[in-house]
Length: 112
Length: 114
Image (cartoon, rainbow over all chains, first blue to last red; front, side, top):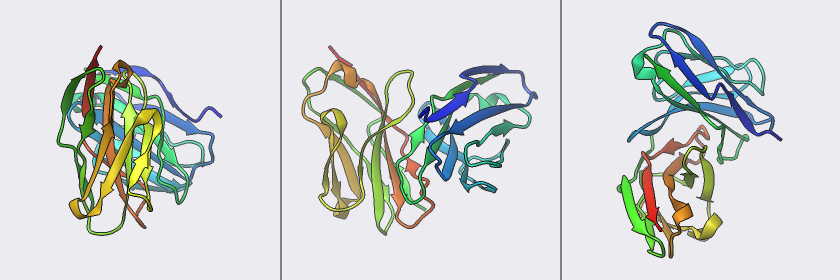
């Protein structure tokens, strides 16, 4: 199993550009989520999904969209990038009824 | 909603020193508790977890944590740290019967000098 994979690993955007961060898992996990990690702020939940076709907002959803068309994939879209979105983004998945999160390797995003 | 506090933001130790990282949560019901570790340049991975039973939980690499319900605490301990323990440590809590998406603390950066 590859576990949770994320692409790209690094990305630089200009303010106003849009892009999609990819996340995929091959463990047939129902739950998937996106976090951003900023110095001194820990991990903050952006959006999460409890299954295909079902998504919900987390703590910091503004400026981000998600969709879950399949169990495996959970892309995160930045609609119009802003410098405040400079961060490291982690995707995670877990099995229904279990709480252990499996994290991807992260995407380091810089918005100039 | 639950919240998690990690009181130590930065800890610097010498090898062989003992470690205790504090974690407190606020939630009145039953919780599941976790410690995750993030080594430099890597993703988070589970260190240990507590769901029920013995409140003293042992994890990987000699770490343990004790759940004290009366103090709403889940402190992480290791009797003798190594240089390779240099990492960021995150406490997380999930309310039982909730969304299964945990709330994370802000993290503690641990630097161990050889």
